[in-house]
Image (tube, rainbow, N blue to C red; front, top):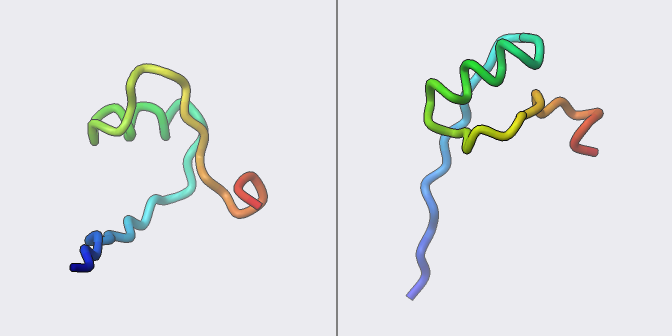
Length: 44
């Protein structure tokens, strides 16, 4: 049996760290720790 996770790509406009943290908190993605915008340069 193979489970395939559903994926969703969310287009997030350019925003600063504070705006991204507020957005992530509203989406329920944050546990309260500071999050950073996942840019290609930061992820690579």
